[in-house]
Image 1 (cartoon, rainbow, N blue to C red):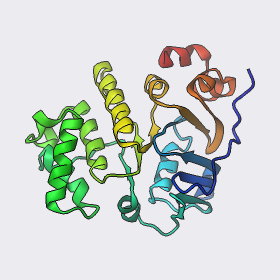
Image 2 (image 1 turned 90 degrees about the vertical axis):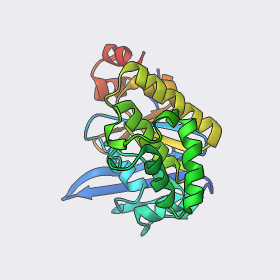
Image 3 (image 1 turned 120 degrees about the horizontal axis):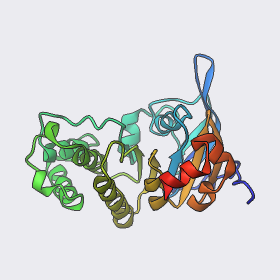
Length: 260
């Protein structure tokens, strides 16, 4: 099979997309990202995969304003984002989660979600409304009055996503939402991410090492290796791409075992 085209270009200038064009990030002379081009459209779930150290979290940090590219540009719904702080990204409609959920342990689940709304300028009344809707949507209603610091891992992951959604974003960046979860918890994560996309039509970029999650959720997969784009395509194209198999998992057998 012909290898997936690693130079596929996004619809640059699209007014409703999240775009990174030829983005380069350098740390002490080392290129963590080297001319990477990436895009996500509203209502689309894009998987971002690659070995440890390949640049996945660096790209998320660049898209969300925690890092400024040395060259290249990021555009959010047609607007260049250079100079925007992470808070400005959030207020304009870009939310994200982190590998570590880091809830406000001494606040309840409901209060944690309300903080996500208040942080982007919502009134307390509107924050309560958003929290009530998200508690129901993500199956957290029974835990609304629970201190966030004592939640099990699966519920903390859902809380992290609920807190991000409280900002009512147009795009959502998820950094390893299924990390450390049991199979049943992972299935629940897949289910509510699917429902979020269906009900809210937001664009979702998903960094995840669990290939079952990527293959079941994503319409398109972008593969990084050593800071460069190795391949981009549908899940079926990526899982049979020999360059990806060699760079990411070493053998097709290992990929199929994790991605089946």
